[in-house]
Amino acid sequence: MDTRAELEATIYDMVQAGKGILAADESAPTIARRFAAIDVESTEENRRSYRGMLFSTPGLDEFISAVILFEETLTQQSDEGMALPEVLARKGIVPGIKVDKGLQPLANAAGDKVTQGLDGLAERLQLYKTQGARFAKWREVYPITAHNPTALGLEVNAEMLARYAAICQTEGFVPIVEPEVLIDGDHSIERSAEVIEAVLHAVFHALHRHRVVLECIVLKPSMVTPGKEHPVRATPEEVAEATVRVFRRVVPAAVPSINFLSGGQTPEEATANLNAMNELFKDAPWELSFSYGRALQEPALKAWQGKAENAAATQQALYQRAFLNGAARTGDYAPVMETEAFI
Ligand code: 13P
Image (tube, rainbow, N blue to C red):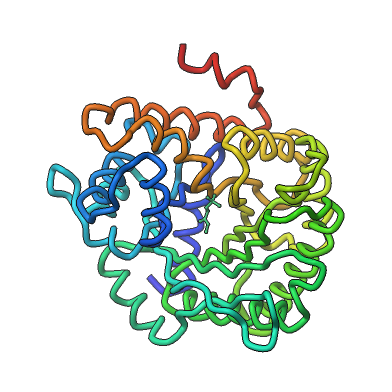
């Protein structure tokens, strides 16, 4: 298969009606924080056992088309001795890999950050392909303050995402392009809209300069919401309208799918906001979907508590959130389903 056909086949498998992406690519410090919240030590065995349990959830493939993995997971095995990417692939779920190497402060742009990991990326992708990965993910982070992101921050981060995406496509990997605008702070929804518009404008300009094929990327952005400390919460309808208004201005219709991150929203908020977008904007030119980490895993982690005997409850908690987000993909979710769905 030539590279373009390979990319198109992967997009076809990743972007499916009623389904979205599970982000299970927490880096070592992040998964340690998530485990610490339930008093579980982050050992390699605990990470293997937890993630193996998630991926073996019966029926996961009804609502999940792809899973983003952390590097270590590519070489780990299930309790039955099957490579974890293979566990997913056998269910028709596409395994992918987070390839960035975390954040550094951006010099001379106080408060802004930039992501590392481009050196040797093509060679790493060639290895990851032999381990079963078919797509990649790279995250740039933008804090919102009175001064951030700076003009320099916007430009440098967009350039990094575009260079990463171009390398991925050359190696036959679909790039998930993730410009995360942080929810932290007390900014208004209008300020969030202004920043996200500027960020996406810069990102698509850079993707164009680097000749990235827009039909073969997945965009993983933040929703337009007020900051976490803002005194007034926005309704799902307000989030949906503000988000789609901005995206219509700056995300070309050639992009097949927008898979939002949850970014600190509660599981219920993340589902309700996505649902409102699909209910109100059935004519949107892109799929409006999810690529949630915390919003899919929080209830599962709570159910697990590090105990093997809680495996069935853990899987049921993940399945329930995947089911509810699957309903949000078509605008058919209602909050009452939170309690009704599995009684
Ligand atoms: P959250 O949905 O928890 O924000 O995670 C998604 C992700 O992959 C962040 O990089």
